[in-house]
Length: 270
Length: 164
Image (cartoon, rainbow over all chains, first blue to last red; front, top):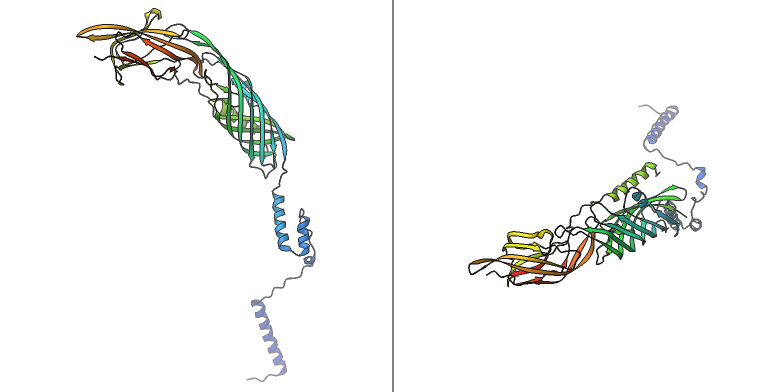
């Protein structure tokens, strides 16, 4: 047993305190967050934040302000287009190409699409159609005289969050056409009576009402000019028929027996 | 999303392909001919007549429509440029053990109607049978069952023949 003297006691106390301090540092390290000088700086509101939201922040109603700020942010991310986003007059031209390739009939129309909110696009079209055909197996010449057609409907743009330059469209359209046709130079040979006869079916008038379900795309080519294609499934609502038969071609519709059609058009956007 | 020239060409080709392909084959009859069926008198059961010869009166070369040992039906082609066609119907008739051939004359009055059927089948005459007359040497009676003759094959006329 040793008696403590002043030097020894101080040394022992120093060692104990050092060991104690080291063990405490190792086990319970305190984290002190330094106070950053910019903490007290008032940040400017995010660009586009409404004045109402800013005022709510200033008043201290931070919950409402944050909710408003979030809504503003969503609104900025998904741009809301004006009611009349654009007017897009167009000319359909696909039948011109097909007729140049030998198709016996065609419809040529001009129309206008009214882009509302870049989402709903009412459309109206007026045009003319004609046909002339005399296939080898047919015993006459079918002429669909130049007759008008009218279409009206609406498309829905699935890319309404994007710029109107590119659109994916699905629509429903109603079409109507009053038209005239004739079949001339019909020869019917009777194998028994051996007296071939020739006759005409002239002055035929009919009208057709049909519906179309269309799906298509529209893309910007350059400047205000765009191009669109669509595929249409169409069906008769009022089928044309007379005492002398059913017409083969309906302006704006195509051949009566067809269920599918395609169109292409050039648009100019205002 | 940039549009390339090849995209436009491909879309146009797809559209043309979609529209241009159609079948131009005619699957319907290319003529409208009335169908005549033989029935046993007083019944609704069809009857097979023995040794039947049928032809058009005034047909070129006296050609026959039916020349058969038995027939239960036949198609009578109508003259398209007139409103009446006449046919003779010659049938074997057995009476008291004697076999004879008896001829009747069938007269059909009709209205020809030019009709455009389709792009594939073209146009033809349809007919509306306005009346039918027959002599009753062997035939008992006749009945029009469908007055409109189209390119759809269906019974137009019944000829009732006594079976005994």
